[in-house]
Amino acid sequence: MEIAQDPEFCSMIDRLRDEIHEGGEADRKAFEELVASDDHEEFARVLTAPGQPLWARELAAFRLGLAGDPRAFEALVLLLNHREPERCVSAAYALARLGDPRTARAAAALATNELRVAYALFPVRLLTDLRAPESVPTLVAVLERRLASDDPHWRVGLACVEGLGALADRRSWAALLAPLPHPRLGGGPWPALARLVD
Image (cartoon, rainbow, N blue to C red; front, side, top):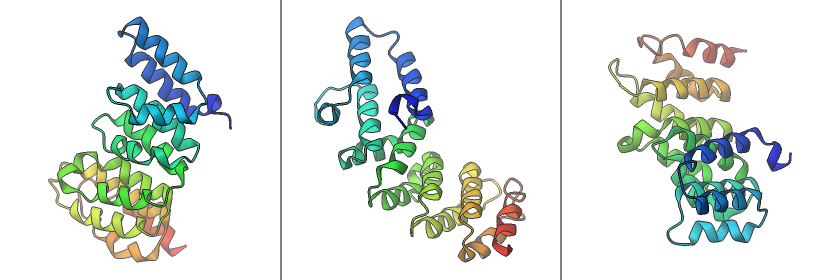
């Protein structure tokens, strides 16, 4: 698929274009030039040059990530843990296609960091997409931490349940039984458990 036809790329470009709409003419021109570029060395320079705006770093990292260029890795991991969910979505998409062997370990570290649990949703979903050796143990560990009935991050727990269901690994059986009494997670495990007995 050509980059211009990639739906996630198009969505990111629309978002970033709106983001810099209020910027100056120079920013808008620089944005359009970077969007039109296919120069991986230019993208790499954007990632390392001081004073680059966030939109430029995100765009450069995304393009390098989709091209399988490992120079995108660190920037994409930082974006995966960003406070703005849209940036996390784009970063996860690019990381899933980067093919870097460090990705699953990085996603697992972000998902299990209790100090950043509010931002763990996208690392959890990425681990599901990656189907890496780290995926099931990490999702089980994160789910176990989200079982308190008053846990404010129950959506992360639900993402773990959904991820474990998608992975359909029998090692997750006990972990999927535990949320059944949970007021918000209780309905989630049934489809996942059904996949394990098929």
